[in-house]
Amino acid sequence: MVKETGPDASRGSVAICDMNRVIGTTVAIHQPNYIPWLGYFFKIAHANKFVFLDMVVYPGGSLVNRNSIKTAHGPAWLTIPVLTSGRSGQLIGDVETDNTKGWAHRHLATLKSSYGKAPHFKETFALLEPHYRAATRNRSSLGAFNIGVICSVVTYLDVSTQFMRASELNVSGQKTDLLLDICRAIGASTYLAGTGAKSYQEDAKFEENGITPVYSPFSQQSYPQLFGEFVGNLSVVDVLMNCGYVGTRRLLGIESKHG
Image 1 (tube, one colour):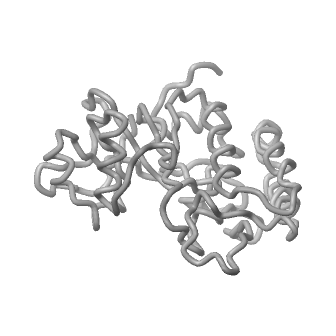
Image 2: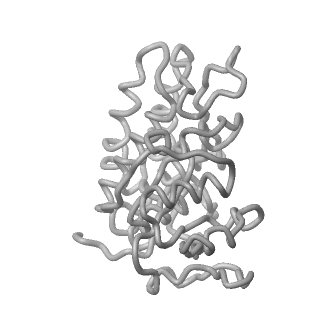
Image 3: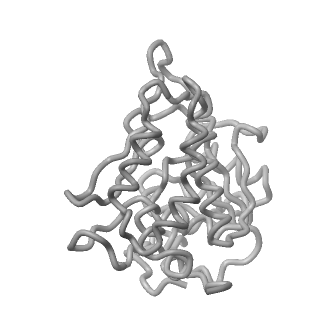
């Protein structure tokens, strides 16, 4: 497991998760973000089941439709344009990409120009390119695109976590109550949350229902990068391009199965 255990999380009986001690079914839940950072994949890799939270209101200007990579000029955002006119309050699962903007072609071109000399460019670009090439219709589902990319990365990394969408479960509620309902619906014994959830998550509700809430111990470690000084918390694409299969698995705290 990762050596860094993050900040102290001694709040009640809840602590930063020691992944070696978790037993039973561990569940993680998150919105289907666009080419997420490595911490997102850490939760996937250390959960038995991962639920894409696609039935909550789409938070405009969030990581659901954008993320950052590293270019020769420093970090830069890649943003997927989405249809919002007359769609106030739309759910993530209903959001459609505006493919008339040619974003998929631009993103591929940016990835090629930024990472063409990265040691693992060839295999990483081949992994991502089909998803972007398929975004040719005038509009398509943002959630489906993001989930497709995430699943391809997870498959490439030989991670066997089971995926499901919250919209396919018979669940309801808001905030902690919704997360709890999802956990109960799929038989969770442990709920693995990101450290950002500590400010709003009501841990006592999980404990009252026999589910142990724990927080991810993930901490960004440096790795070889192009273009000078290390920049952390970028999209997983930056990690894959520079570290490949073996190095990315190592940063996720899981042993390599080959290579």
